[in-house]
Length: 134
Image (cartoon, rainbow, N blue to C red; front, side, top):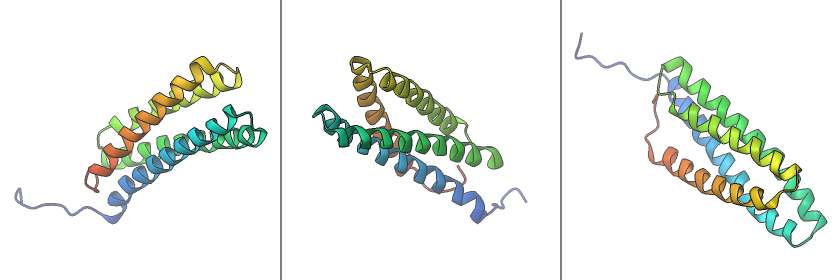
């Protein structure tokens, strides 16, 4: 019996795909935010509206990432590392919202740049790993 392997169930394999999709959505939202930030800096009222809407989408995508990471981690007993990454992004996104609402671009912009860089690194991390119950 020790030589037998247990096949992964389709449900277990779908969870990492959900995490990948959530990270990709978050990265896309972060890139949208960089584009609308440029329009906002150019004093466009439309840019401000798009940046505001994009911030809500980005925050929602980050919450979806946390949820997908928790759902992927709990049933299979996998590594909690994706949950920690997702939670870290949620903390950064929360700070980013506070800084943006307070109109503190000296802190808001560098944190945004750091979040985009971290989002790209996280996207590369999830796309280079094989799909499966891990």
